[in-house]
Length: 107
Image (cartoon, rainbow, N blue to C red; front, side, top):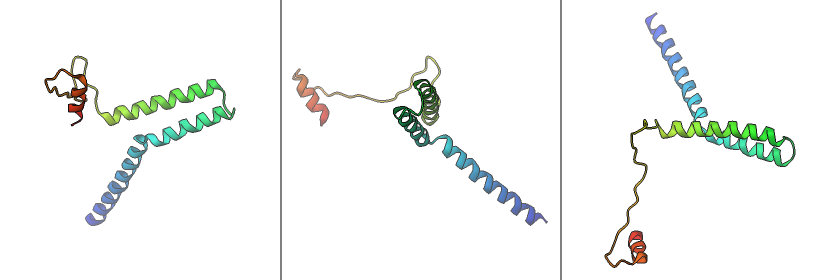
């Protein structure tokens, strides 16, 4: 009896984890939303929807795309906190020539 219960619970956990994975991939897939936006633009160009309907669809789709990007980036730092997002470095060869600086930066 214990073996059957263990197998049943293990099977349910497996199925639920697969469902969670599928839902997570759907929530974080912006490709579907991009296709919907492209389809809406095509419908607008063909005259199948009005400018107002397109504006509503576009606003909704862009908001959902922003949500996905924010989820993928991670949490936003609190006000006052700083987060490094990139670094720019320039090298000075001492000649004072701006072109020489750009050339040195490319090396």
